[in-house]
Each structure stands twice: as structure tokens, then as C-alpha cells.
Length: 293
Image 1 (cartoon, rainbow, N blue to C red):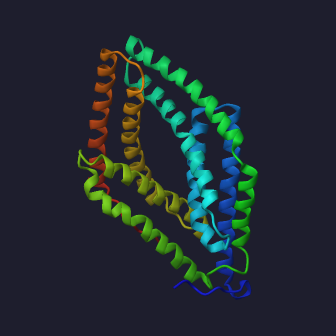
Image 2 (cartoon, rainbow, N blue to C red):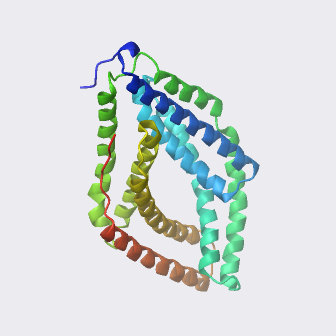
Image 3 (cartoon, one colour):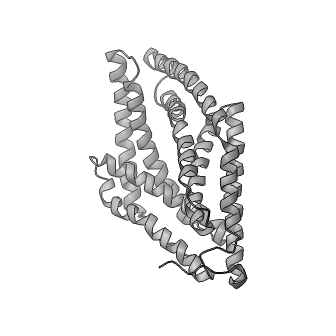
């Protein structure tokens, strides 16, 4: 059963402080997303594209976390718009990462690699034009209203928590729910055949990391050690996922048999190395679901 609806005047000062910090975190993330959107429209630097994609995911996590506390009603449309933005940037991000990967993993004087680089550069130009259209059509004014409605609700009388204990209990229950998929997937993720498990684990770790990043300023806690380890796991799993994306990307490019064989050898060697590194990380530094509100 959910905690009874309480009046703001019956809330503790500590609860009000947590809710105020939650409000600030949400609006700060929204401002950062809008800033990065302007940066991508202006220059489309790879780092800005990556950061905008991450910002959209992090904001979606905050919306899902704080909306139930705000009485803001349905947020399905808001989350769908943010998810659409995230997905729209995926193709361009993969092309940028592929360009960096093949430049660093293959000699530039190799004609096969040089040709692939040229094709990827042409693909980036086309994809960038599409992204600009998506970003210009992004209805940030309507989303701004929705975000401010959630933020305003966090300070209103209809908060469904009565004191700090019920509020931190709410956050603790979310943390347990987010960590459970990680716990379920860790054992199988080091199996070379379990690519789907590693893919699911990467997503679950990402969600857990966003949660801790959000909670750190909200609860004024230092989760630096936990976040550092999560970043190692996310980086290792993310690189393996990148290799899979590069493989799919190259399959859609018209390459000669020799070119394709050359590229597949590079990707296979990288995938094997990354899996060995990930298995070592999982063995030496296992993840735990420790969360202290």
C-alpha cells in the first residue's frame, strides 16, 4: 500500500529539502539537454552527440523516478518523446564510433581501410542532415511544460510521502528493483555464447548507474566508488556492443569479399579481447547492490 497523501505542512524539513533537491536535479538535466541540442544543431561534434544521447537517457530516468512523487499524471508521452530523441541519435553515434575504431585499429595507408573510412564519412553526412531535421522538429516547448509540471508537483501538497523515512524507503525500493536484473544476468554474462545476456546486462547497469548519479545530489551522498566500478563495467560492455554495431553497419556497406574478410578479422579479434577483459573484471571486482539512502 502506498503511503497516505500528506499535507506539505506535515512534512519534515528534511523531506522538503530532499524534494527541493530533486526538483533542481530534474530541471538542471532538462537545461543541459536543451544546451546540448543547440550544440549539435550548431556544430555536431561527436562528443556533443554522445552527450546529448546520454542526457536524454538520464533525463528519462529522472522523469520515471520523480513523476510518481509529483502527482503529474500520465508521463507516457513525455518518455516516448525522450526515447525517440535517444534512438534518433543512435545511428550517427555508431558511425562516429566506427570511424574512430577503424582509424585506431587499422593502418591508415591500407586501401581497404581508407575506402571504408570514406564510405562512413559519406554516411555521416547523410545521417547528420536527418538528425538536424529531428532536432529542429523536437517539441521542446511542450516538453518544457511537462517537465516543469513534474518539478512543481514535487513541492506541492499532493506528495505521496509523509516523512523522510517513507521517501528514502521509496528510493530504496527502486534501487532493489533496478539491481535485480543485474544480479540475474551477471552469472551468465561471461559465457562467450551469451551475447544477449551481456546486452541486457549493459542496459541494466546503465539504469543502475543513472539512478545512483541522480541520488547522489538528491540525498547528498557520495557514491563515487560504486559509480567508478559501474563505469568500468559499462565501458567494457559498451565496447563489446559497439563491435556488434560495427559488424551490422559494415554488413550494410557494399564491400568486396577481401575488404569484408579483412574487417571481420579486426572485429573478431577485438571482440575476443574485450570478452577476456570483461571476464577478468567480473571475476576480480564483482558488483553489489549496496545503496545507502
